[in-house]
Amino acid sequence: MTKLPKCEDKKLGLLIDLDTCVGCHGCVVSCKEWNSSGDEKQLSDINSHQKDPVGTFLNRVHSYERENSSTNEAETFYFPRSCLHCEDAPCVTVCPTGASYKREEDGIVLVNEDDCMGCGLCAWACPYGARELDLVSGVMKKCTLCVDRIYSEELPPEDRVPVCVKSCPTGARAFGDFNDPNSDVSKKVRERGGVDLMPEMQTKPVNKYLLPRIKSKDAVSSVGSVVEEETDATGLLGWVDRALSKF
Amino acid sequence: MHPAPSIILFTVLSGFGFGLISIVGLLQFLSQISAGDIVIFSVIGLFFSIIGLISSFFHLANKKNAIKSMSQWPTSWLSREAISSIFCLSIVVGNIGWVFVQNRYINEVGIILFLLSLFTIFTTSMIYAQLKTVPSWNNMLTPALFIFTALAGGSILLLDYASLVLLLIFAVLQVLFWYIADQSFIYKETSVGTALGFSKNEDIRAFDVAHTNRNYLLNEMVYKVARKHAIKIRYISFFAAFVLPMLLILMFPSNFSVSVFVIGIHFVGIYFSRWLFFAEAKHSVSFYYN
Picture 1 (tube, rainbow over the protein chains, first blue to last red):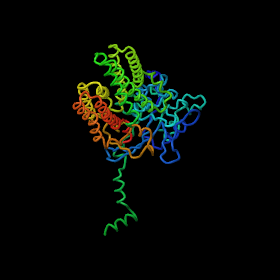
Picture 2: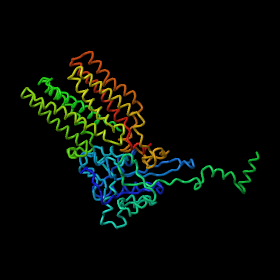
Picture 3: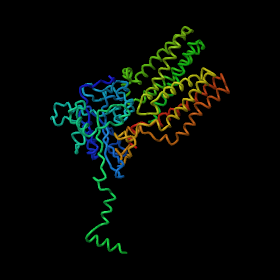
Picture 4: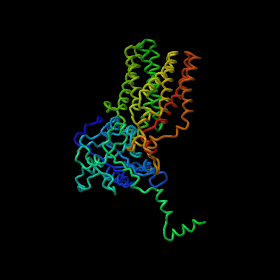
């Protein structure tokens, strides 16, 4: 069970565009909603309406700033973090009970909660913090790539995508088969240079990220230039400026 | 990493138990121990191993599935550990029964117990050493340290000067482990840059939190409290686990009641050593929370 399959048919995953993500946490909320509703599903919260609430989430959005080396200015970006459905998933091979597994037919990494003993070793083995132990049910939770949506026969065809993809208001998230070179996600990865997270961990993530494009010096008016423009005011403000400058 | 008391007790107590069993096994193989001593010290080893295993059981969040942990031995070190420890302890029980009833022993069973208990300690250490996510654990010093910690502890009750040699090897490995863990090259590849798909030296910092409170990831894997007092605790650990036992064994050789006292002090030192083993270890997920 915990031996990794080849997954030669399909490699389903997400392509996340950090240039487009606005950090609204819409994917976090919709993921929590979808995966907490219905029969036998639970992503529990403790103290949810009191002080110090803690809860289980399958998706978290971080906020970072990086220094643009050509303009010397900080640029912010948002970073949604969830399971990458790795080809060499270390979380699967460490599992002692066989609860953690990777599906041969589409590469989705799942947890069979009926077998999980809640030792937490898979969460330790994951470099990305993609797994969280549910503190109420005592079993490990992780992104299922909405396996109950994408193969659903009841949902209308346009809804058969992971709920984070469906709910993203800016279209920063795309879902598709990374094994098919003609899929939209594969094309975008080629065109824009999709990257792996922590490639040095040798997990071979299926999910790819598109990094924020670096703004060039010409394309952006820097903070400094905006401030300078204000000192060259014309009209009434210019007169006030000149008049006051005399003293 | 979070230094959970249940896990620390598990590795300290079962490590000592299996260390004692391996020393008894070796002496049994070499015919250097009486039948009565085999029974007494095997029972002590069995007791500590089982207390350790029970302690690890309390770490599980969903205990009813614990029995399933024996199933994935082809890939999982934790599964191998579960099987190996149960198998080893079954043979110990059989050996105790045989020696108790017959009042003599089979030497070959001794070497099997010696190797099997060492293998069990090795599987315990590999649960940690296999994790690429924690570079200070992800090397062969971890199994070496676990095995010689167990052998040194197990030898205090049974060996005189030979236990000094084992304590010395343990001490060297312990200092080496701390030295390597402190080196910056241990994180030569991972940074907040690579965590986000950029290059290693990208200048990135978090400007807002991903969630307003602590969560499982932070509690379990981003444990920073310890680092403040780490150096002091290392001194305490080294003194209690190595220096004091060494001095007491030299001053009172072959004194059983002193040996029992030495074991007590040694336990305190090893407990702190294991506490640091977890508390000082840095997991790669902490780069997302830089």
